[in-house]
Length: 329
Image 1: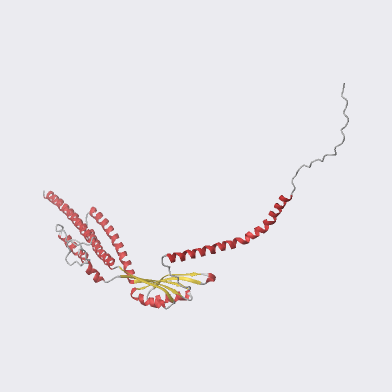
Image 2 (image 1 turned 135 degrees about the vertical axis):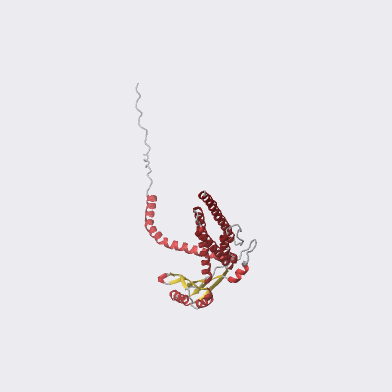
């Protein structure tokens, strides 16, 4: 009788454990989705005491990320405070057009400047003109953002600056938002791993592993995006166009610009037509020298031959009529 009672007493304990695991998983999914959306909330009081304390400790990092929406968790930081603490994040870039005497020497000087400023050469292209003479090229370097202005001043001394442009893009909001999402998703992945280590049911293990795989993939994507933002903020690209000729700016729109473009196109077309005529003219002269005698001979033969007309027989002088023959009878 005691063994029967102990057996029956074990079944409610297993069922109760499954219910607790299911409740903990449901509470985790709800808490994780709220943290991913940026909201903080309290844990379910109906879960076990151990799972509740673990979720409370894991939910603290998302609350510090500064989410807005609904009731704000205690200790949460507003987006404005998060942006202020992170500082302004700017993506800066610059472009210069230089007229130089020799492209190889200018490119060598730019490479040396990039190395002294702690940067690298991203790309380099030099184009050769007639007789192997370099006429234009492009060198792109990447230097630390805090040394961008000093680098531009050094590059301007390599040649004659004919065009200069720089721009800045504020990515503070995107940076702070991505950083908060990475922090929240990291805490969520940690909670899933903790539940996975304490799961004793096959169904719970499969569900937790699937959830862990999805959240880990999202965390990897967010981490890569944050790293790319950090690189863009810390390093600034500088594109330098080198040329041995003067820089021709792009003409503005309008009637005069259209007239100038049309005249330029007409002159170009006339030059092309003259080139084609000059290329064909020698062949036309040679063919004309060969065909001219043949045509002249054919026309002479056609007009010089007399038409075939029958000649008329001349009539003789009229004489006296001859004798009339006698009639018979």
